[in-house]
Structures are given as structure tokens and as C-alpha cells.
Image (cartoon, rainbow, N blue to C red; front, side, top):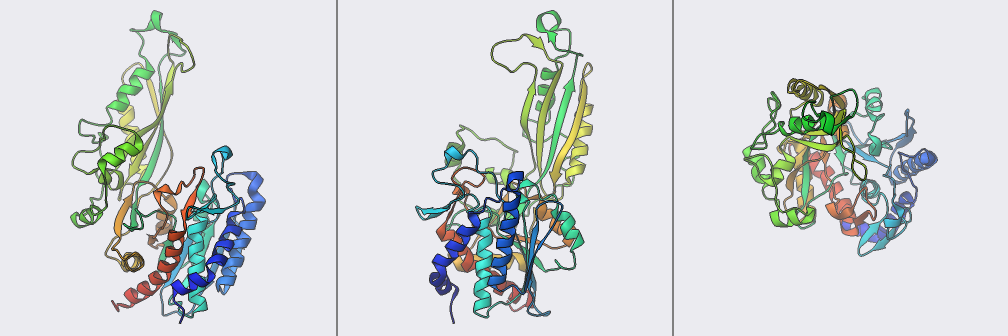
Length: 459
């Protein structure tokens, strides 16, 4: 019987050329000029799934770009895995910063270079080739469904509706996603959680027009000064957020999971050097990696007001603005947190100014418990593939659609990604190591096997 390693070796060049065909399609979801390319990429995915062994596959229209759905059902007595991915990519600009054409992929230095090489065409294609292997060798142990969308890079605005309208068709035991990173091949990891997001814009208004700072300064309240003072008050001396009720629903991470996450190699000096700072700061009582992954935060993303052009203009500005994001952890709710922020921010406004706080957008956090068959199957598959027990990592970022899946479909997601932080996704010279691409194809069939066994209670 052919092993997955033998199968990869035999079909290695074909796998790469088929992936390159997909990368060559400039499926940029944010540009109207690429609308036809989006449909072309969806058809390519559909045809690839049929060739890989799907019993049915279709391109499903939405109010935006289409979703590709496919399935192969082998038995009602085995678990069903729903594979999620996306075929849309970020714009390639600025083009002059690429070392090769973004939509003409090449192999260089052991890596695939091109837009979408990692995010998410390369990682998605691992699932298609693993699916092909299991079908060709008669080793598919689970039912499989695929839901591949074309709007992830622009917010997945039509996917919740698609899921709501297709609950029965999408029914599954787990959602398997490869659209995240691991620490390194030497220190494999699995993303066990994602922070949520609550994004605000605030406005402070003082006088009815910009005033001469000499004639009015010292008597009229300055909105820029006020805004800075208000923002500064949102954290105390221990970097704890001072909004009343902000921490009330924070689910504390267990001592056991914190110990597992602490196995992650981390050099404070290297981290500081990588971002060009001399010191780090954060909430008292937590490590640097915990501050990024398991604790909520509040950060100013932008602040402006008054005169900011070249030269000088001595004014007391009429208005000042800021954009503020709060990263959230289980069980904080994005909209509820926004209301807490608004209530507090308005309450601390001094006399002499009017303050507004607007909730722009957000998403819920997500966590995958480490003691479930869904997570344990991923841990076993990665450990067997990389010969090392994976480290659970709570990502500081957000993928709002994951919490939507749990809310709408009632299904947990497993984020078994194989990308690296160095892959430059969303940036010029995006790349994906060949080693990770092929290791992903090795690991995915093992996930299916271990998940079936764990669900049956055989392990």
C-alpha cells in the first residue's frame, strides 16, 4: 500500500504545478477588476475537488463572491469533517517591492514565492492533495465536506448567511482549518485560541471652530489635550484597563494550559530586537507571550486633530479623534465591551467638551479546549509528522468567522496551520516553504485517522 510520503514523492511535481495554476489566477476579492478571476478560481477549486475524489462539487453564488462546496460521504457511522479555506488573496501592491511576479509563482531557496502561496492557496491545496491521496489509496476514514469561500480577505460578509441557509448541508462534527501559522518545524504548534476584537472611534469637540492659540489658549478647553488625558486614564500603573466591568467576564486560562504554552521558545531580547524597541511593557503578572495571547488589551490605532501639515499653525483645534481597538478573550462579548467603553469614556469627559464614541466593528474570541478529541487528534497528527509534541498557542490576532461557525453551525474549529511568521502574508514576497507544504499533506490524513479513532473511543 502506498504511504503518504511515497505518494507525495511520486506526484510532487504535479502537485506543485496544479498549485501554481491556482496561484496564477489573480483572485483579489477587494478589486472589482478581478471579479471574473474570482469566478475562475472558484471553478478551478471545484474541478480540483472532483479530480481529487469528491462525489459532488458546486460553485454556490452569494451576494458577493461564490462559495465552493463539495463532499464525499462514505458512511453514516463515521465522523464528518468540514474543511474550510479561502481562494481569495490580498492585493499584490506595491508591485515594485516583489523580487518576482506575484502571480507567476516560482521556487527559490526551497520556498514557493507568489501571492497566495501561503495565505491561503498553498495551505488549502494541502487539503485537496491529502484528500486525493486518501481516495486513491482507499484509506479515507471519515466523511468529508469542503466549504471554500472567496471573501475572507474582505471580511467574509456573506458567509454567515451562507452557513445559516445551508445548516443541514454543512452539518459536521468538526471544522478543520489551515490558515494559521506554527512556531517552526523544529517547534510545531497548534493554534488553540484567537482573541476577539472591539473597534471604536472617538471624537472630542470643543469650540465651534479652530481658535488662535495665543488669544484663546489657557481659557478654552483644548480637545487634543483632553483626548490625550482621557486615553491615558484608560490604563493604570500596572497596565490594567480601568473601564468598569471590563474584566468581569474574562475567562482565566488554566494553570495547566499556561504551563503547556510556556514550552514555547521565546527570547525577550530577540523579540525586542525584531521590532526595534529597547523595552517591553504589559499587564502585571503575565509573561510577554501571555500578554499577547491570553489577555485582553486596549490600544490606540490612530490619533489626530488640529494642524498636522508641514510648518506651523498656532491653533487651538475644534476637534480631536482617535481609533481604539480592544482585543478580547473568552468570554468577553464585542458589542457588550463596546458599550462598556462608550459609557465609561463619556463619563470621564470634562466640562467644556462634547464626546462621542462609535463602535465600528468587531468579532468574538474563540478557544479550542485541549482535552477534546478534535484538538487531541490534531496534536497526535502533528506530533507523528514532526516527531515532536506540538505546543498550544493562543493567537493574539482575530479570525471572526471562526466564532461565527460556532454560533451558526454549532461546530468547533481546529486551526491546524502550517505557515510561518516569515512567510510575509499580505506583504510583498509572500512565500511558503516546500517543507511545510508537503508536511501538511502528510499530517492531514493522520488527523482524519486519529479523529475517527478518538471519536470511537479506541484510543
